[in-house]
Length: 63
Image (cartoon, rainbow, N blue to C red; front, side):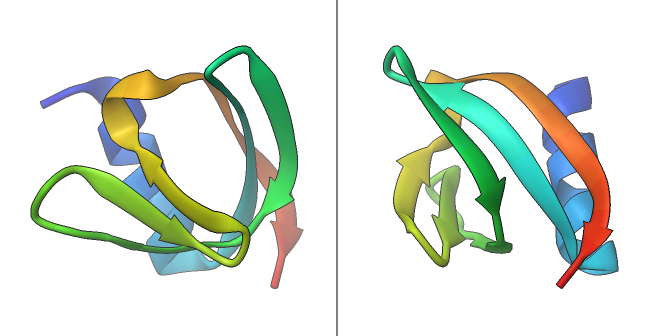
Protein backbone atom coordinates (compact mmCIF):
# COMPACT_ATOMS: atom_id res chain seq x y z
CA UNK A 1 0.00 0.00 0.00
CA UNK A 2 1.24 3.46 -0.90
CA UNK A 3 2.15 5.85 1.95
CA UNK A 4 0.19 8.68 0.29
CA UNK A 5 -2.85 6.40 0.20
CA UNK A 6 -2.56 5.85 3.97
CA UNK A 7 -2.19 9.61 4.57
CA UNK A 8 -5.33 10.21 2.51
CA UNK A 9 -7.26 7.57 4.46
CA UNK A 10 -6.17 9.21 7.73
CA UNK A 11 -7.18 12.65 6.44
CA UNK A 12 -10.65 11.31 5.60
CA UNK A 13 -11.01 9.71 9.04
CA UNK A 14 -9.81 12.85 10.87
CA UNK A 15 -11.71 15.22 8.52
CA UNK A 16 -8.65 17.26 7.55
CA UNK A 17 -8.38 19.37 4.41
CA UNK A 18 -5.85 18.30 1.77
CA UNK A 19 -3.92 20.01 -1.03
CA UNK A 20 -2.54 18.26 -4.09
CA UNK A 21 -1.70 18.61 -7.75
CA UNK A 22 -3.80 16.78 -10.31
CA UNK A 23 -2.99 16.75 -14.03
CA UNK A 24 -0.71 19.83 -13.75
CA UNK A 25 -3.35 21.81 -11.83
CA UNK A 26 -3.13 22.72 -8.13
CA UNK A 27 -6.04 22.13 -5.77
CA UNK A 28 -6.13 23.66 -2.28
CA UNK A 29 -8.41 23.17 0.74
CA UNK A 30 -10.18 20.11 -0.64
CA UNK A 31 -12.54 18.18 1.64
CA UNK A 32 -11.81 14.48 1.03
CA UNK A 33 -15.04 12.58 1.61
CA UNK A 34 -14.44 9.00 0.52
CA UNK A 35 -12.12 6.63 -1.38
CA UNK A 36 -14.09 4.18 -3.51
CA UNK A 37 -13.15 0.67 -4.68
CA UNK A 38 -11.72 1.95 -7.98
CA UNK A 39 -9.11 4.19 -6.24
CA UNK A 40 -11.01 7.39 -6.89
CA UNK A 41 -11.20 10.21 -4.36
CA UNK A 42 -14.66 11.66 -3.89
CA UNK A 43 -14.48 15.23 -2.61
CA UNK A 44 -16.48 18.43 -2.36
CA UNK A 45 -14.83 19.73 -5.57
CA UNK A 46 -15.20 16.63 -7.74
CA UNK A 47 -13.90 13.11 -8.33
CA UNK A 48 -10.15 12.52 -8.72
CA UNK A 49 -8.25 9.38 -9.73
CA UNK A 50 -5.73 8.55 -7.02
CA UNK A 51 -3.05 7.51 -9.52
CA UNK A 52 -2.95 11.02 -11.00
CA UNK A 53 -2.68 12.84 -7.65
CA UNK A 54 0.75 14.21 -6.85
CA UNK A 55 2.32 16.27 -4.06
CA UNK A 56 -0.35 15.34 -1.53
CA UNK A 57 -0.31 17.48 1.63
CA UNK A 58 -2.62 16.92 4.60
CA UNK A 59 -3.44 20.24 6.25
CA UNK A 60 -4.01 20.86 9.95
CA UNK A 61 -7.34 22.61 9.42
CA UNK A 62 -10.44 20.49 9.88
CA UNK A 63 -13.90 20.72 8.39
